[in-house]
Image (cartoon, rainbow, N blue to C red; front, side):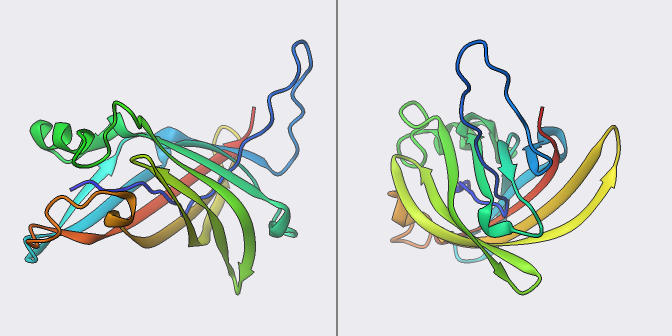
Length: 196
């Protein structure tokens, strides 16, 4: 089912302050935004302790500032609308949005805001606050740069896979009888474009 958050990615991007009225927003060469149409959030969870079930969130948005030469100075902010959850079953999607899980009416978004970025060999360890279903937890996620290219402008890609326990976010439905696993693996793939 859909437990995510997520998330988060492995992904990791951050917000730019809102400028005063009439002021121009200045973007730096290391400021990026998520290309929603080419980014994805997939989750998997064990169903009935038998097989893995996968679902996704169809929308992920965010901003990132990341200088490869100085990643520690970077920042990430990601937002996933709970309404974009997709389990290939409309009735199940409605259940995931209900109080047993994300309680989307009161908590319409899953967010990740970085607090620290550190080098971890060739990869990055991005620590931040993951908020969903009315709970906020600190998580550290591994992030790997997977490529860069040019297509209607410069693009760069990052990927992350990590596991959370949904019970830590108050989502305990089905855990006690093994109807649905507690551990949820999140796979976040971000394609970033130059911030506008």
